[in-house]
View 1 (cartoon, helix red, strand yellow):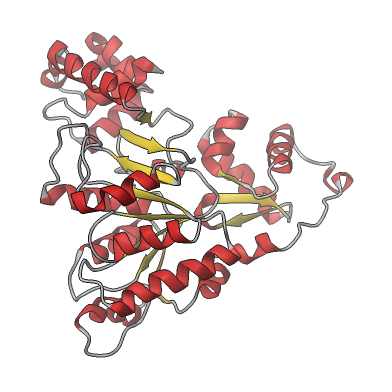
View 2: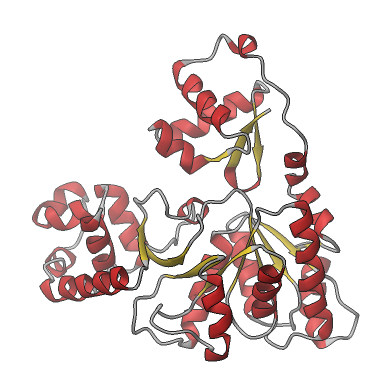
Length: 369
């Protein structure tokens, strides 16, 4: 595990490789550890790799910097999650541009059954603040295990985090810099409180400044770890609309609260709804129903095992795993627990769903009917 953390982090610093190239290399070779340990033979494991890239993997200085970063993380109780780690957000792992490494400080699982993000303008009005408060208060009453994700920025972000904390919901802030600082500093108190009721997440190592381009990068994490994106207020252009675009590209659900015609910070939401790129949202009840999460409020009917005597051995494994988890399991958790390849697992789940044994929910979650 330590080696995979070290070498995954090193891959992010190899000049000329890039994130997509790193993903392709990992897909061909299997792990970051093997990439470095067999660097001299990578042309056999990954045909087409350039000699220059193979040579760049001989990088003692990069490894030294990565070792220092891991020591910093350990000292500050920061978890380093790689794509190979079971605790890596499984929803995000499905995305082509998922970070190779994530740094997380907090006390919750990033694979909770229900995760949404709330984003919006940095110039939140009283209308937007009231939406955060009323929506999350009602959502807690219906779905108290839901995790609220946002970016700890001014405006809707911070109001979503604070409302979540006020009503006892866990909340995660995705940062555009390393975990050696909090930006903006005026949100430090809220960030510290979140460590015990959610956490702080970033792909950036310590020493990384909150540069403008980093905020755009972090938006894909906000969208990727969530089942749904909710835009509360937005002008005609803004970072929250970028998050909505990314969520759409990930085939995730997107919702928007409508605003008064002519209001500057309602234009973005109204346009999303008008263009059928977001579902109009007015209440917590509407979200829960749209996501088919209202079924968790109903007691699952007992399943008679004798009805499924024709289960294959692999289906039997999946059935037994889901039987232990009434709320269901995410597909990547099933892959890890059952030790069945993702392409094979997809076929198994499809067959079981067609036969009425399981039901697919939002976020790649499956549960017994």
